[in-house]
Each structure stands twice: as C-alpha cells, then as structure tokens.
Length: 159
Image (cartoon, rainbow, N blue to C red; front, side, top):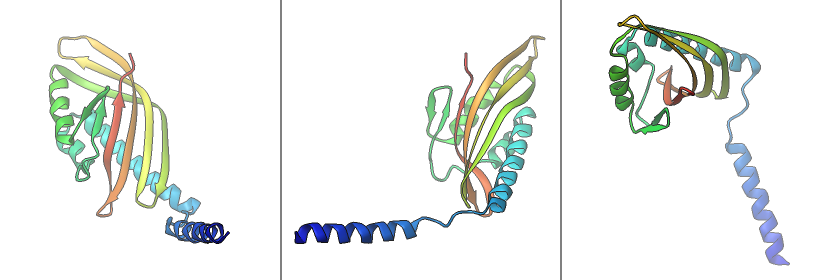
C-alpha cells in the first residue's frame, strides 16, 4: 500500500513539474505577428529562388543545428549540400516562377514555427522549352538572434 501511495505522490509531483516546464501559451495577437513575420520571410525566400539568388537563399537558413534537409526523398546532411544541388539543377534554366496554391503557418512557440506550402512551378529553359510541375514543401523556422531562419526543410515535387 505504501508503494502505491508513494507512486501516486511521485506521479502528481512529476505532472506538476512537467506542466510548469512548458512555455505559456501565446496570445492570438502574438501568433498572428509571428505568422506575419514568417510569411514575409517566406516571400523573400521565394523571390530569392526565382532570381537564382544563392546569397538570398543562404541568408534565409541557419544550419548550426545540423537538422538535415530532405529534397525529393534524398536526405542531405547540410544546407551546403542543398545549395550544391541547387546550383547544378538551375543550369540551363532561363527563368523560374512559383505559384503558391496552399500555405499554412503553424506557430509552435515564440521561437518556432512550421510552414507548409504547395503549388506549381514554371521553368523557362534556355533551349526555349517550358516545364511546369507541382511541389510540396515543409519548412521549420526558428528564431535565431532575433531573425527567423529555416533550420530544416522537406521539399518534394510529386510526379
């Protein structure tokens, strides 16, 4: 009987400690402000990609956590690997335009958010052809030195 009482007391204490360890909930206004900041950063990222602006793309990312990135089913250990593949993939492309169909921003905390998006891309190739296709993305954002940065992405182009 003493064991059962001790176990119940331990569970109650643990629940009390665990519940106070979680951050306080954000207000609706705080969530809206964060979502607005993430949306603005996402737009900068899209424009950088459409301009083939490597520095602009790199400025959107913080890879210090080494969370990894996924591109069409391929796991990449670092953002440097993502950029290396990007440089290869943009060869022969004259222009790129994204059209976002769906976008959802989920604020997880005052320093973390998730953005999911899908849509289509249109590529004009230097040989005159145009290629279009869909995409689906997930970006994990974290606030780093007062700036929102992508710390992980999962990008795919459905066939």
